[in-house]
Length: 186
Image 1 (cartoon, rainbow, N blue to C red):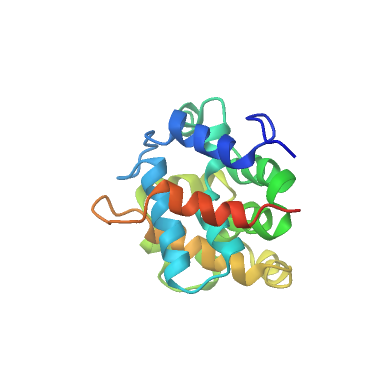
Image 2 (cartoon, helix red, strand yellow):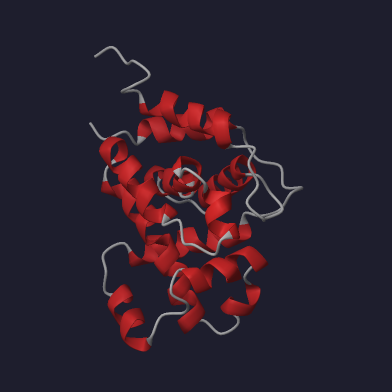
């Protein structure tokens, strides 16, 4: 099948980063720096390609949202995890989309279950935690642990918080686009 921009997921992702990757939403890194760092951290941990792609693409929903900076400024949850997962599901399937859909709940889970995790969050992550429902209750955390993909979502969330270093050197965009290409659902 001949790929056109309308049905080529890699071209679409590349264009999304070209348009919105330089955007900074209160962290010390741009969207593209954050994506590359998270992808690199996943790759360095030996994660499967699908989880590396999920780590690289986990915040694509911020770039697809009409006004993510405005949502943050007005203390509104932009539900970027849902938007991103829906976008990714059609091309990459659940192996990539599910950890993306679950990474916000993984933050809420870790804040509830891991001593010191809440205090380790960046100021922006702390602000959005409140918008996203705050730390999980014990019942919510138990239910989250029982979900398929729980471990991948928690791993992705750890890379998410670690991938905010403005001086970190990473492989380039094309490296992670090639990994994503290998994850396209056939």
